[in-house]
Image 1 (cartoon, rainbow, N blue to C red):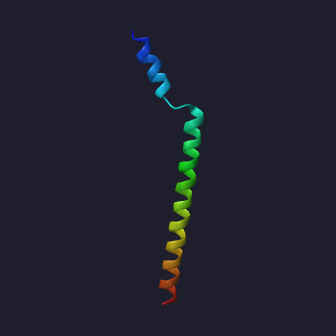
Image 2 (spheres, rainbow, N blue to C red):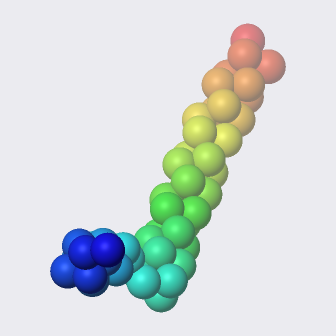
Image 3 (cartoon, rainbow, N blue to C red):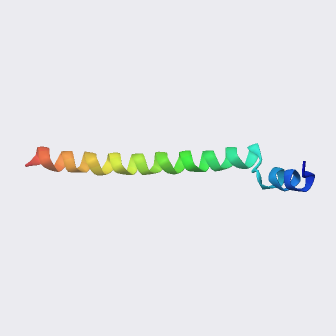
Length: 51
């Protein structure tokens, strides 16, 4: 087995901490986008009801 290739493979793999932080950022962005879409839909529904 090539130990150098194994070492490089381990080095390329992101740590759990990095992945956890990235996942929290992704979740926060998804939540932000969902809330923005919800506000847009509520505004559209409100304008339709007002007609």
